[in-house]
Image (cartoon, rainbow, N blue to C red; front, side, top):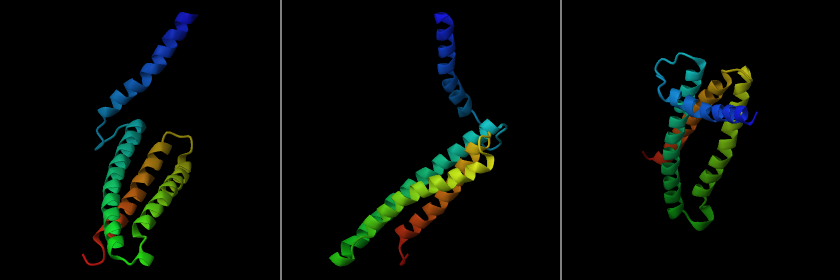
Length: 137
């Protein structure tokens, strides 16, 4: 009995590693299975999130610069941006989780959530890029 449990546990532990290895070879230009589509959607979101982080850093630098020349009673650009971003993240996550309910419990749910996060993140990235540019550019 103990030997069977060890074999079952060993098999279960090896599954995620094998699955991850299989996903690394997915061609996201033409995914063939729902698992592939889920993987590609997650990769797209990861890339969009990376661009968002870059845009946020630039926007924050711009807001700090704005704060540097404002009178003391008008400062707050950087704090406001930070607070807005902290509020935006849970909004994005909840909005996209609700989108996932279109296929709740199905194999498409992760793809729908990831695609939503990608789209909403790209929209937010554009807003942050505009903040970083300012009005005079």
